[in-house]
Length: 235
Image (cartoon, rainbow, N blue to C red; front, side, top):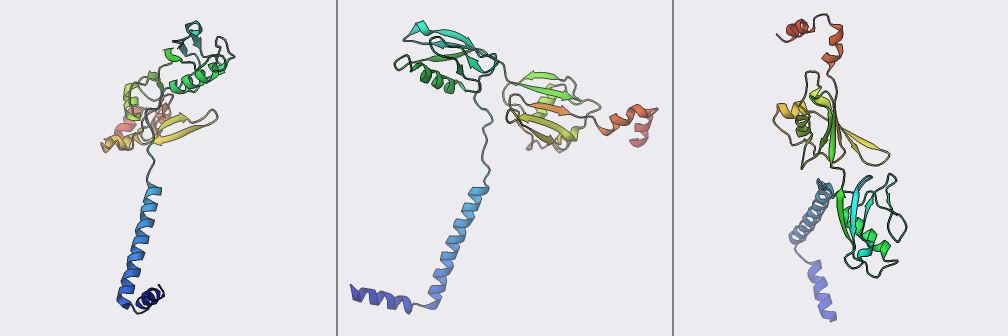
């Protein structure tokens, strides 16, 4: 065993310098490749879910069916405080839960008085997903959000831009919590002009669009003959 160690050490000491350099370069290349891969993984954007599950909210009506204990079948309405009043147990806070989450919470709550309860949850009546379009669009208002809809499509659904619209600064308001709202400014004028909608944002339920007035519409009331002025600016 000692001879083997001595021979191995000798071979390492008397190895060809060119081979040592090549080996070192190879190790550096492998290390650099790993670092590049790690940086790429860190910089890779995380995909976000565009079609989240519906979350129950105030005013929704829910049917609860107990296949093995039908005496507990009931229809409940989510109250303004987010709670529902249940038969046989105390009130339960359910606002903001998806259907699977609501089923799990109900089964856990009823496990206190029933053995291995099985509950079927059906949304009987609920608020349809919507978005709001305001400002300088043809038909401001509240619109049902059907399927995958982008900001540009939402503006079209709301009657399109009018003559006073500032196409380059469309504002998208999105509530991210009870206390905060995010705001994103979109340049639809550029997107539509270049026929490139890759930066168009997909709406989420409850989003609000606001199209402000352009600069000309703000000063037009103070111009004696705005049409003549515009003709001189843009012959």
